[in-house]
Length: 266
Image 1 (cartoon, rainbow, N blue to C red):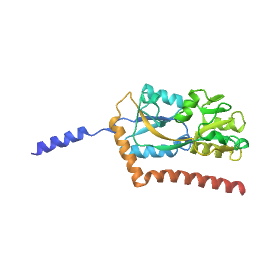
Image 2 (cartoon, rainbow, N blue to C red):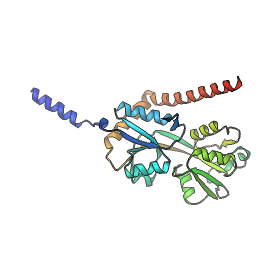
Image 3 (cartoon, helix red, strand yellow):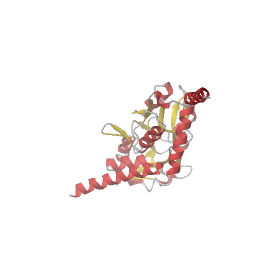
Image 4 (spheres, helix red, strand yellow):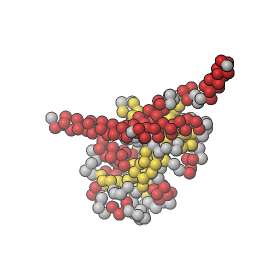
């Protein structure tokens, strides 16, 4: 009887997924406030969420911040295990397995120079004519089907591709482009850090609300890991931890901004 019970215990132990056997290599783009590098440390809302989910399933991870095109190439070739935060596209689904639960619903906004905010407000409406406008995007970043298809169909007068969203903000402030498309939180972060609050404006409404995910390279079988990730992510959303992570980040941002303002005034 004892041997029989021992056999069942060992069999059950063997069948459990051993996520902690190797460190999972994750890659991402510096995309504040979701992912950013501060004092050589990777931080941000998405980073905190990802770290806590994997910690809950005892899976060690490493995170490397790369240009987005290189990050995509890493997971496609299997040099990295997963990438976040990624929009779901048919092209990427060929070499990536996405988790089911949404990491973040990202609002995609058009940003324009404040001098032209009124005259360009129509481009955020339904079925706009993009043909007169020069657009700036981050290379290889997807902005959801509406903008991606407009770019692919060459609907814009010109498309400038840069390596960072901050570069787009600077080009727009200098009036070298007409429109910058960005995630709402990311745009607000760049605008605040660069001191462009008066010169750049976000058009309303958002042109699209697009879910973003963590996606795993198909070079390895991550089926069990994805299932566990989704289980914990749902748990975080149900018990309030997810919202706590988001609220805590922006509370720190506001506190830091207020402290900086007080120092300047004094």
